[in-house]
Structures are given as C-alpha cells and as structure tokens.
Image 1 (tube, rainbow, N blue to C red):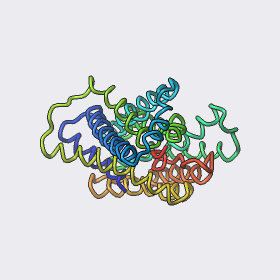
Image 2: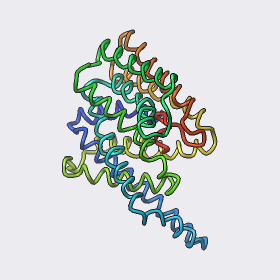
Image 3: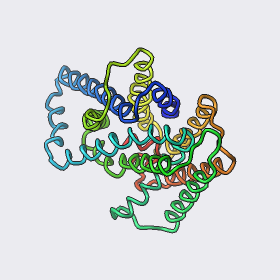
Image 4: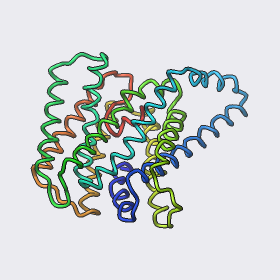
Length: 300
C-alpha cells in the first residue's frame, strides 16, 4: 500500500517544481539517516546488554573490499538510478505506465540470473519474459487519458524496472552479511550523496517538506521496515502474491488522484506484466531467499 502512494506524491512534488533528481536525493538521504539512527540504537542496545563482542563480529564483513563494492553498486544502481528513474517515468508518462514498466523487475531478475549463471534458461522463464515483453508493448501502444507514451517515458520506466532488479541481483548477499538495516543505511546514504551535486536542495516550504516526509519516511523507511517484519512471519511465496497489490494500488491512486484513464488494451497489458511478475515470484530462484518481486525485492 505504501509503495502505491509514491506516484501521487511524486506528482505533487513535481507540481511544486522539484525535479526527479531532487526528489531522489531527499528520499535517499532522509531514509538513509533514518536507517542509520535505527542501526545506532540497535548497536547501543547490544552494548548495554553486554553483547558488544557479538556486534563487533557482525561488523566484520564491512572490512571486506568486495562488500563495499556491492554496497556502492547497490547505492548507485538501486538508489541513485532507481530513485531518479521512477519519478522521471511518472513525470513523463503518468503513474499507470510507470508502474507497469516498473513491474518488469522480476523479468530482469530472471534474465540477469541466467546471464550470471545462477540458473539455466527454461521454457517457463522464456515464456515469462515473452509474456511480460508483450504486456509492456501492449501497454505502451495503448496509452490512455493522462498516460503519455513516448521514448522518454518508456525508457525511464524500463530503467526503473531494471535498476529495481538490482536489489536481488546485486544485494542478495548483503542482507545475509550485514542485515537489512545496515544494508539500507549505507546504500541509501551512498546513493543520496552521489546525487547531491545534481539536486536543488534549497530549504523546502512546509507543503513540500510534508510530501518529502511522506515519500522518505512512509513510502521508504516505514515500508521497508514493515516488509522486513512481514518476511519474518510469512513465506516469500505468499509475500510475492501480496506484492502484486502494489501496481493495483498505484493504478487506483492514478485514477482517483491523478485522473488517469488507461485504455482497455493498456489494462490487459498491465495484467500480463503483473501476472508474469507473480509467476516469477511464485517460482523464486532460491526457495530460502526473499522473493524478487518489486514489493518484496526491497527486502533484499
């Protein structure tokens, strides 16, 4: 539900003059500071309980250069690029188109997993890629009221989906080594700091600050925390099913708030993409790993 509110919030910020890069910078830095504060509180609690030695041992992966290579890569692709591409796609093409293209992330995971040698191509995986590609083409060709199909809107949307997939392709081992809090704190701060030179970080007005707080704290910090808590209580397969509510919520918000009216072919195309994402989540690459679906991908 919380991720589904990103579209109207991004539209509201764009109407107030904020660029996608500026939105991305505020979102990453504020959420990154939030995760850092949680990390600090956890470390202080561990020390007060007398488990400082355990804390030190758990921090040892940060001494490995390859861990930092992964963190920087996740920060650049999963934060800098993704957090910029999504509002840019919304601004150029509308919420509905942006979310359909975003939901190609599980398909990118399948393709990337084959390229990295994590799995072999199967008839099922090839079919999912073809169905999702057909859905994207149908949605892009159909358009609708309030939906602008252009080379830029499609490119930004596909970039959002591809960069979102990095949470699985790049970050799948980071949470196992560092835990989600440290992983998110470091990656978001890296991604946000990289964007600072390109953003207009003038002190925001109260209404802009409220929207930025909603984007950074509710749709990012709180959403990631709730997802992490949920994945400790339900299976990744069930999480992938629940995650398909995200584009549905986004579409409802687009219709109710932004006045978008996607055409029937676009709805069919979106259903094909979401169905492919659901099928990819139900047949996760590693049963013990969090699902690679767009909602659940953030847990990685």
